[in-house]
Image (spheres, rainbow, N blue to C red):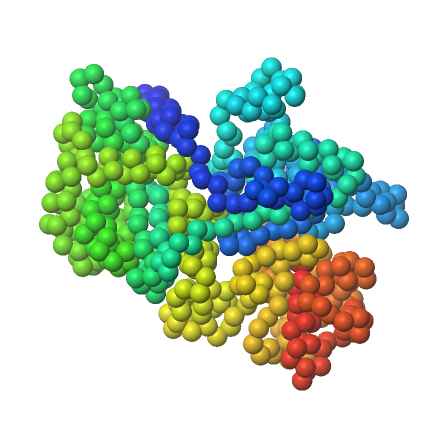
Length: 576
């Protein structure tokens, strides 16, 4: 009986989510442009939709050559030696693989968006453009030109299938009428270069950021535990607003004709406001109604302790205390546990309980003003999934990490108005220490001259370092002294390091150096580059003399800081 009731209740709530969001896809904050050939360039860019997963370089862009996989990329064993444009053949007589870095265009259909992008990521793609295979019904020209009997009435949403947490590259969906033009150009063996660009609105010298979540959401918990010092460091230069995602029980048919809840223990107010059951057991453990109650409590805490300054120190403290003390089956709904959280977060419980009551409460068949406001806001914003964080009204994609949110917030300021904490800590290797001390001891820049991250034509991230660097000789010597060659795995590609280990560029560099300590090959051999490929991926203007020195595996002179920087850039260039 419990399983049946859970299924019915879940179906009702999912139906409600679809109704609420059917006509409200997230607003596009990105730009898709074709630079080559010039005949496909459009001043306004190409219409597209962003994926609700992956990690776009907000404030930056990816500009690369495009290769058409000629496949839906549903098979995890991807053949990188097929597709278009056709490449030269290697010594074995096979067509050369797609030369990295590149943007991969794949066909829609056959499997989920996440599966396609994951398989593309494993091949080393910097980004993915999925070519839609069905016309929009509203696009009469497309329907007429393709003679399709079937069209899609609503715009597609590149949703996460629930497994997209490992996706680290961005992806777009391109509508059929435009994608067909790109594919035709590629099939004709003409090179196409595309730019995927992400912008954050920069209205003034203050950034507003909003988090949509629930008290039972496991994904955002780490962020909520750790972001308090960043919110405090940003101070009045940023305004945070937490939102609780609530299901509309009336639209979900959870409220019966007699005013009673038809969704069992998922709702409050006789079926008006609902949440999913965290442990999928309607008879035991934490109920949806418990989640709704805790949601209202957090809304009230923010109204009284966060709204005045947009920082809400007490709110962050309460949430952290609740996660530590009450976030389990035994204490989630315990009033005594909540009181302990109030005490340690310096919150006056009577004020919060009065707020809950004044808003309409949770018991009677009556509206709750705070919940009604939240539901209206989530429909207006077009929140499709949670957790979702918005910076200046733009939804952030990918993992909800402290440093990625901080970077996005810092990119949201009007140019030249960024607070000092952004200038000092954005890109700092010792990020937590920088936030605590407001000073960075080890900064790693991944930006162009304007301060925006970029992956340009013909190369990966330019990892040029700034500031004084340790001697290359000392760096390699220290690595070699510390390495255990017997346990070191050097039979691993750069792509495998990046995807499986999720290594940073510095970690990759260290492993390359360690492998060089244990083998007779040069650094360039370990990078798997021939001379032409290495020259092509030279983003820092290394001279032919320096190139010859570096490709022989020799380090830069210890007293030549400029050459040392170029050498480090040469080692890391193209590894992403």
